Image 1 (tube, rainbow, N blue to C red):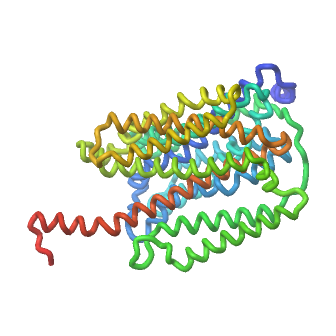
Image 2: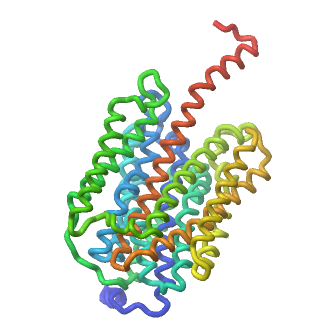
Image 3: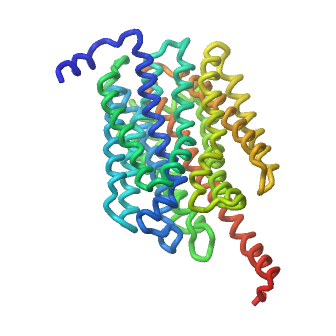
Length: 471
């Protein structure tokens, strides 16, 4: 133990930056994989605990299994990034690995069934998201401290692309593991998080001086409550209400939306008046920081919607049309979406490295144009499409998102003073996580509205065409 303490307190050597890169990359990989691994394996999980999520009164369990993790991640990353600036980024990061590991163990040992089993999973998923937020909020700041400016884009590119690719690798892993056992979806995180916890405590060092200050209690309270209420209202807005397909006219949902926005406005007023704010609004005066975060928010909404709709499209329509059993569709949906992940992995590190030499703007802009082109291509596909063109469009989308994300992250983190990198990293993660959560609300509502207006008439016409009386 004494030897470990001595090693942890020793000055980092010239190879420390690679240790920091490999450890933080593992941290964001497991955190983002667990954000999506449940989405594709939900049928197996609910079958395993003996609960029908589509039965009346159970839809809330389904939505909170998806959005609970995203909500906690979106709300807490800025707070935890600020705490990293104050008390040490490595200290908060290491604690995050420990929390994540404990939650992973608890998830894999769910002792209940039915509603109690679902609540156990939802609550521990939120605890897991708390640990994951500690990892993602401080990983970019740790790398920015460890790497010189000439290599920063490459390092952040590897880290960021791993984080984004983790979302799609989670889909593949969820499909594979759900075919084995629903608990295996959660077992995957246990050895990785335990190993990462030990490794981070042994190997990572504080390379930047922490800057103690006052905790912005009022800012923390107004932001957490405002963002939490707003995202919770979105969660309930996509649930049925009365005789309507969605709940956007529910008075409680409307009150939540208005109340959340109001609290966030109060938060902005508070942050402009306190001496040491949690969310440094002054950073938005830096053009690269403001534009980069706005672009990241919009890209996250598009990416989350793409991910959600592809899962529905493949599992609900295309795979059954091609003879795949519904029980096997999670596995094959993950496999057929591999070109998306491959595009990420190829473009991210390369574009991050090149952006160090040629600047971020060219790569970020070109990347988003490629993503837009892939969406136009997907619009032209028929319902029963050939896989070749579909795979090519997925690869184009992944490649474009890889080109955009790494240089954009490098530009954001390089544009702020070193003492604010923790909170800047948290703010960047907040925009990205909020975009993913918002995408579920937006695209789920669009899908439900479309089905509610066209599916009943289509079913009626089809039944009458097969001789069923209109009455």
